[in-house]
Image 1 (cartoon, rainbow, N blue to C red):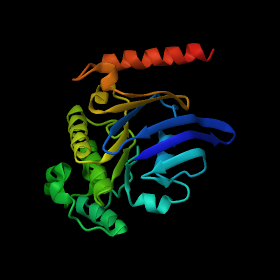
Image 2: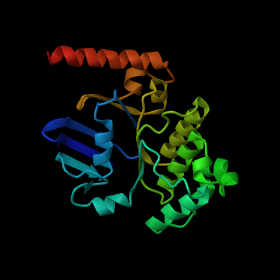
Image 3: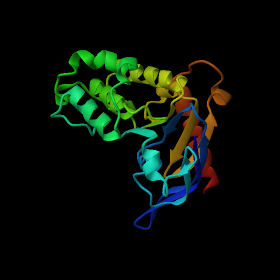
Image 4: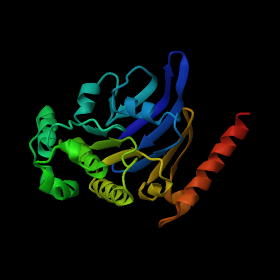
Length: 241
């Protein structure tokens, strides 16, 4: 579904991404981890066709993100790291506005777990929602046109643990229904929900792994992932000194 080859990105002469290479099969849930400045948001800008000034090759559904970005945008949904819906519109008005931009109806809503939890607040101004409710609304709006691929840049930052858990459970359900998902996170325990992990540091791809091959089946602690990433970072620093 997604192919990234030799992806390199410069900002004002400074390198932001360095020779990234990875592929995402259809129906996978990929986690992206790395500290601030790792290049995660830059990568999301490129994958979602917002930034087409890069070196290398990026394909979404077999289409090039530079040459065919207009077609790609109908196939993807994006939840950016900063809430970007209209606080002075109601919940339903925001959904209807985004659906109209895609020429879509609202047939997606009845099957959405998030909509079932928000529909009683459909007439409430979005600015009055809690952080968790806003993020659920953002995901509904990103999915209202039934995209094949969903990108989420740190979707649970700053919201309560209960909302974080429900968001990841719904993302897992979407994955099981065939949606390809790439989501970044700073919370290591959330990596238990992903199939594959892309770990980045200062624009470098330290590893891209199928997590079942690393941890086996079942959940492990956030400490496990912290140790795994710290070890990968130490090896990278040693190899590059």
